[in-house]
Amino acid sequence: MLVKCPECQAEVSDSALKCPHCGKQLRKPKRGFFGKIFLWLFYLFNVLMLLWLISGMNATSEIANQAVTEAEKAGAAIGTGIGITMILFVWAIGDIITGLLALMTRPKA
Image (cartoon, rainbow, N blue to C red; front, side, top):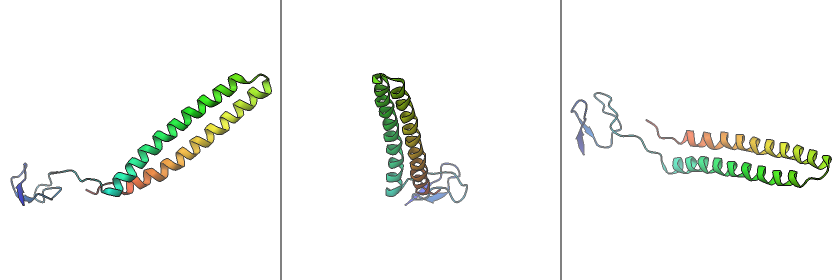
């Protein structure tokens, strides 16, 4: 079916993304099925990692508050630092992987 371009009034296919005459954007390209899945995977991964980081911080603060000796407090602080570093490392690697998948499946103009 043919429609008129709002810019140059030329007749253009209704499935065209841009007018071939003037280049006006007629409609936005949409993500495919896998593109949507990878984008939602990226969002979900970030939300889960944030929740994991917050729950880990809460758990370690409880352990640090229950520590009696200085050695227990130092151990809790060191363990917290190692745990947070590991979470941030996994978060960064996972973000790179899921972000690249979402980027590679974005709609083409």
